[in-house]
Length: 196
Image 1 (cartoon, rainbow, N blue to C red):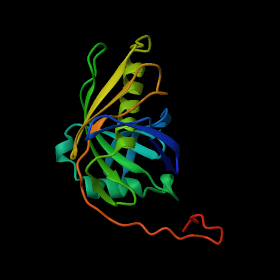
Image 2: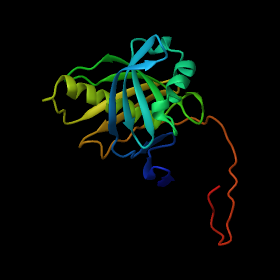
Image 3: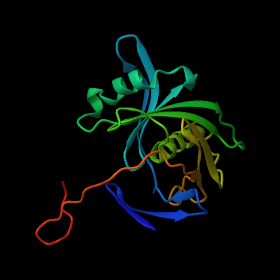
Image 4: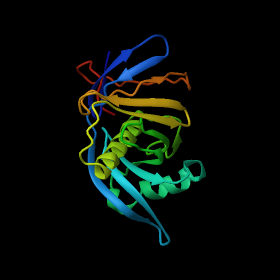
């Protein structure tokens, strides 16, 4: 199946009843921001990643202790990221070793939602890209043939893998109905939907 998004057309594969893999496309490291000031007394080490939408990946010691809504909102609206703002991912790096699968714990503040979100595919990809960037910065000669990052979020585990760069990065994850809704499509004079 294909899904048209603001970041382009994405291909998705449904595996069974509750598993979907989406080809997210290659993420880009936009900037490394060590010691990014957050207010007057606090700084965070962060990486700005474009994974279809902008994500600020912030390394923290204990992700469970982060006030995601308060700190995420503050970072999301920093002047340097305006006018669009950024999604903010708080990532705990438990272990990144040369031959181990990096296991990341991630919590995401999502723009538009303006709160912590239960799961975020582009956030999983951004966290994976930032982790790989950190591995290669520490060990520049290390080029693993298969990169995998497991992302544990509030909504459950996600995984991201890439065998040949990021072109095939697909975060598979379990699906669960979180709600229902209706979308009204406004038709233009031609009978095709128009942008609202």
